[in-house]
Image (cartoon, helix red, strand yellow):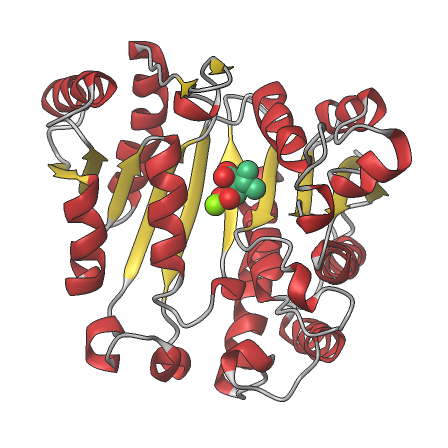
Length: 356
Ligand code: IPM
Ligand code: MG
């Protein structure tokens, strides 16, 4: 059975890291006889330049009929004043794919503990999974602008909270059985509903999970004070955007992390969590590890190929142990060199092929 991965390189460093992700997909496909079909489509600012809109119908249809979608990055100063913004394409794509749960794992490799802005003993046991609600909240509420004022509305329904909370509770079950739900229930009505729904689900459906609640401001603080105490963190769209960027610094570079956005059915959307980094775009200086981790997630939860994900992560480990890093991690490698070296490691770490 042929399965299709749609690649959306997007803007800035997106194309550089996506090139490596595509080579990775081809290597895995060849090795495990997966007969993956790899296609590429315009998206974001690149699509605005070519077609006048960030998400064309053609790209959207290709994504909707794919088995998994990989996205590089979108946005950049070039389109900041444009009426059509690249980011709007990303929000429309997330909504159209129905990927309401965004999983952002943060762990620290021992070889990189010295790169963390926190002291090494604080980061030793960090293993956090941020589950961010991705298709609701203030990102999607009505907006209004007059000469003298502006408003954005935040709305959550019980079912929107329940479906993402189920994912978070179930992830906690597979991990250390601890869930921290983050809100601003001392101020916001949506947060009060959020807290009520999550509390009820904890009591009635997931009594085996240790559930606690934290206000977003306190969570931002505790994430730096004692990051190792967190297991799964569940939160709404905007808090999750902010908290996951904060958490991404713990392992030393935002360039290391990938994310999986999942809905009730395929395709999922897989992205590194870093942005388009226009300041280093086109200079072959980007860190491809975030894209590589996003590909591991794509194989694991997007295509149900855990063997491929394991091989990818084992090759990443080999790279870390050898100090084979890009400049953001204090290493000597360019983006292409890191990609080449990674693919070599991957080829040696792939298990002997067993035909199905
Ligand atoms: C992210 C990004 C996006 C978001 C932007 C590019 C719209 O920051 O994936 O975290 O805010 O969701
Ligand atoms: Mg963000």
